[in-house]
Length: 485
Image 1: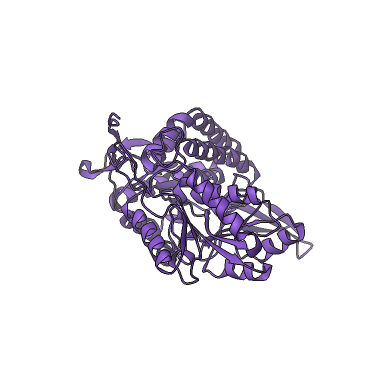
Image 2: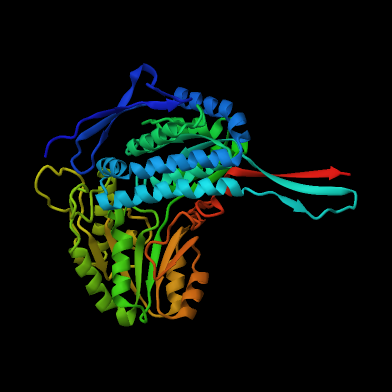
């Protein structure tokens, strides 16, 4: 396979594509081949501060633009993103590694977030509040919070961006984006679409950087930034929250998960098995809402485990650019090492490997970090894989006896982002959904996300909600106005 041509990318600040100070750059690598595919401007604190100032100066005019005008610009951006899905999907697969079909799906839904929020711009309604006195009237207005700093991870580098910055722009906020240094290319292409659509200078800015902490510190401590929206680890989210307290800015956090899937003995076995595979092995298991723990009611566990293992063995591991690949590489050596450690620990504790269980052996120029889709049975209760998010293609199966036990096991974690339940009993579906301490519950549905569905977690999985009618609320302040007559 011929080497991919190395492209170059700049920062985008105040409507201009610009180099970092001193021409600093960093390389982006294809995780399947570990070959360099791009050189990207390496911004730091100075560039972050310049972008924040540009957004601050652009805010007064942008926030006063009529909602219809903001909506029209977002619709233009959606049209551009939709037309570029094929191009963007290939870039996404090159820098992230996920199968091309998954990248096309992510780019499509990512564009959909822009279209959804274009309409939400027109619906940031205020209210007339019943007055406490005859000679007084009370109104509420919803107004944009100000400059928004958005920080996004590498695992869904397209959709994570659009579902943050589209509602912010719809609300009348200006934005500074810092994407992951592992996957900055589609972020830059998304910003290019906003620029091509005609957004005014300073309204959308992007600072790519290897110094994530340095840029995040500027965002968290700057008095000009009035809102942080972050997706990433719980540990980093807590640090950002503490630093943001110094200026009492609004914070939205979408953090770690450890999703359980509960399969009851009345479930459609095939649908549940296919659902477990679809949930767990999407993006090689590097998904914050994918199934991490599979709890199966005891009468079904042997048949179900055999079927899931069979399906896992059928998944082709390889380069995401190959049309028949179902599982791509891990993003880097650290992610690969964590999967190895979790599987090794589970097996040492008595787990049985039903499928996979070792690094994938691939021919050709694929030097990335590939691991076989792995199914584990007889997993000990204290195994790391049952308590720490693996973020890779390994899935433990644990039996349970009663509905109450299943809910207790599912809730035994500090996280509460997503959970799943497979059952044909309508009453059980409601009881389990209400009993699970999670922000998202998929009942007989392994993919419970869409632009109109609220997204966010309980407990240490985060604060606030993205998507749906609630998404824009995170970028608005409520102002009460009383008028004496």
